[in-house]
Image (cartoon, rainbow over all chains, first blue to last red; front, side, top):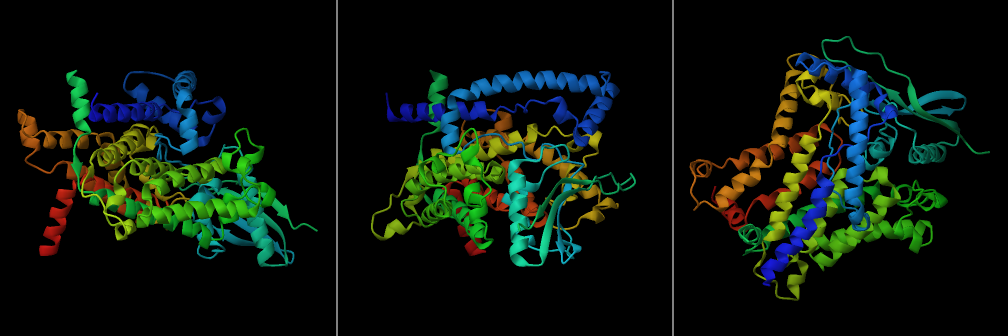
Length: 212
Length: 313
C-alpha cells in the first residue's frame, strides 16, 4: 500500500466522525422547551404556513410531533457519536454549527443595580450609554455566553456564580454598596408594523447582600 | 477501485507553505488577542478558576470534572497557569516556534477550559480548535517562522491540510444554513431574522432601533434572505473548485462555469458578511477568526499572482 493510500485512509478515518457530528440533528425538544414565547410563536407561524399550503396541523399537534421526532433522532445521533466522544472531549472539537438557528423575539438586557447608602441605582444596563459601569467586561463574548439567557431557560449555576462575581466587583469598587441586584430585563420585539411591546419582567433576578 | 483512486487523488499534491503559514499567523494573532483580552479585562480567575477560589467553574462538583483540575490543585495559580499555557502556545503558533506541537498543546489546554466553563466557550472556539488540529498536521511552520533563523525550512508542503480547511469552512456555512429552523429566516417570518438579531441588546453593538422604520427595515430583510441562500448553497463552492481542478474533462456546464470566477461570489459575500458582523454585533473574535481562514481558498501560486498584481497596481 502506497503512502498516498494510507494518507487518504487516515483522512477518511478523521472525516467519518466529523460527518457524524455534523449531521444537522436538532436537540430533543421537550414540552418545557416548547413552552417559551419564542417556540410558541414559531409553532404558530409554522402551523399557519403548513395549513396554508394544504397540510393542516394545529400548533399543539405540530409541537407533539416535533417532540416525538426530535427525541428519536437526537437519541440515534447520540448513539452514533458515543464511540468518538472520548476524543472529541479531549480535544474540544465538534461539527455542530447551529449559529443563530432561531433569532429570538424575546431577547433580554443585562442590568445591574446597586443599593448605595440606602439609594437604589442602576449601574449597568446593556447598550445604555447612561449606565456604562464595566461595560467592556460585560460586552466580552465569553461573559455574554454566561448571562444571555432566554426567557424560559433555567437559571444556571454558572449564571449565579457570575452574579456573585459581579456583586463582588461592586462591593470592591464602592464600600457604601450594601446590595447588588442582577437581572435580565425582557425586551420583547415586534415587527415594524406591530405596536412596540413594553419591556417584560425582570428575569433570572439575583440579589446579593454584602457579607457582614 | 475507481472511487478509491479518486479519493486518494483528492488529497495528493504539494505546494509552497505560505498560505498555510498565513493562516497560522492570522488565526494565531486572533487567538492571542482573545487570551490577552481575558487578562486585560481581569477575567482570568473568574473564567479559568474554580468556585473554591472565587472562579465561576463548578467543574469539580460536576459529573465530568475537567482533567486539568483533576491533575492540579484548585488554586488561583492553577487558573493562571492554564490561561498562561493557552496564551503561550498561541504565541508560539503565531511566531512559528514549534508551531505544530504548540497547536496540539493549545487545543488540549483550551479543551480543558471548555469543559471547566462550557457557557463561556463559543462556537468560534470550537472552530479554532478544529483548524488548529489541521494546522498541527500541516507544514504551516515552514514559512514566515522564527525557526527559519536556525533551520532550513522546507520549500514544499502537502496541499491536503489547506483543502481540509476549505472543507471545514464549507461545512460550517452549510450546516449553519440548514440548521436555521426559526421562522424569522423564511417568508412566514418576513425574513426578519437579522432585524431581530440587531435588536437583541446582548448581541447588537449599537442601538439599531431605527431599523423599525422603512425603508431601513428592508435592508435586514434582504440580508436575511441572502444569508439563508448563501449558506444553503455554499457547497457549490466545492463543486466549482472541483470543476476548475478538472478543467480538462468534458462537459458544457463545467466549461461554462470555468470561464467565470463564480466561486468568488460566495467567498466574497462571506467576507462581506463577516465585515458587516464585525461592525454591527458584539460577537468578539468570530468574524476575525473566520476571515483568518479565508486565505485557504487561494493556492499559493494564486496568492502570489494576486499579490503581484496588487504590487503593480
